[in-house]
Length: 361
Image 1 (spheres, rainbow, N blue to C red):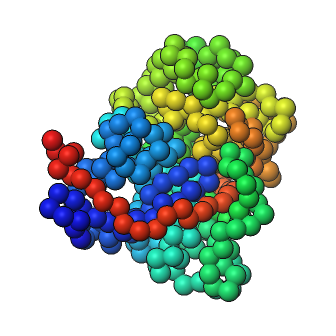
Image 2: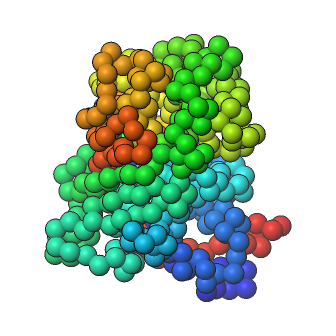
């Protein structure tokens, strides 16, 4: 595939998945391109540039994402989904986390590309999350065998309504570290800050917002602008990561950080840090992680809730509204599952051109 002597072209689809936006690619199309994905993907998105003006990225962590989809390498699944987080300001590509928001578009994309046969009504697709090893069954509305994007379901942080896509998560504990609580404890003291270090859907640390001198209801813009706050969060994150066996995570996105506080719109309020800025809404994987922590006694979350929580719906307030997680079989790392509902929309389908000569200059 080529777009001239200085260009590489790749079939691509631009989609909104949940409250994120990203470029969706077939693994087979990437395999046919003789280019290192660690170089190609920043070129496709337009990094390094805070505006990403020369690519498809949107200049933020929630719009600088790539989904790579292909046939399943796990016998129990239908497709593989490999996620790549492309840094806006550098050429760094992080392959360690997954993204539950972008996951919402993976099922429709797989159908659009002919990887999965549809049925009338809803088509269930078993997705192997390559980054973390989790399994998710995504149910895509397919009336008449065709993907339907229009519908009446609304998610906080996205204007308008779209067709609901249900996602059932299983086998999501220990994806990055091999265990649910990497330090061996449900709560640890990191320089006077009580934190729960947990690996469930995403590797993260959870702490009280007040431990960092904030109420927890501040806007993402205000929190991202508080440089001293971000330095304090990063200091605790780096120390916690060492205790989790992750080593020096400077410049890496894992573990993420959630700061919790009392909610007036749900069961708990969270500010999700990615980690150098505050997420404008909330990561799906972060919501999954927070809800899982709530089901285990003595975690920061379980101690904070005014009642025991082992199963059912946990409503998490975030800057743009709420997100609900339905937990099944909580309190057991090997048997827990969770259900979330989201939406996705196809925005563009065609060919993206990447100038790799510019990246090498």
